[in-house]
Image: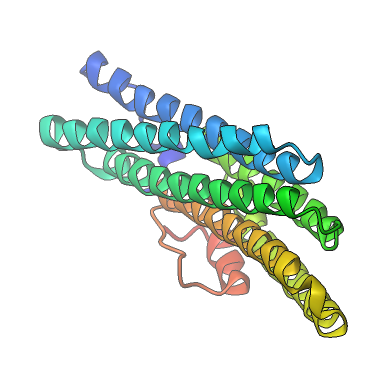
Length: 242
């Protein structure tokens, strides 16, 4: 059943409805923090701000705490309410989404730690252009994924599934360029490797944003698209499957 045709907000128990709304609210709050973590981690590198990088690393604990809180709330809803249909999908989607957001937070922390190392080494800014480009792309994906979740927007979610392929292509292109540079200048190996780790973290953030988009389709359509080819997926959605 399509959640948009379900009477999702008219439960007999107002408290149950409030609990479901709180799950979504807390997930969006976690998403906002994670989005800022990614932004600050990249800014720490591009602006040579070690102090900002340290704050990102320290704030990772707050991200972890938010996931634990959301998981506990979801467990309580499952135990007390035994939800079915779209309500059950919502709880499961929130649990999965919180896990991916926590992983994005981990990747932001990795970026910050590598940024601090690069700032201390002061070996130039090779690869920073690629970092800026890919970071802008994946940050937009995270923001759009959260928006699609909040609005139950499957059209935007499907757009993100396709967009992840673009990030993968940008990542592979950047890695080839940096590998060539390292072969030409062995002195750059240490710093370029750190940039490569940052690029890898950004690519993984794109993957997690893609996962968030897939959960939106699952939540709204009841359709698990995790292992579906994007072209086939479009066909399924147009036919209204789920």
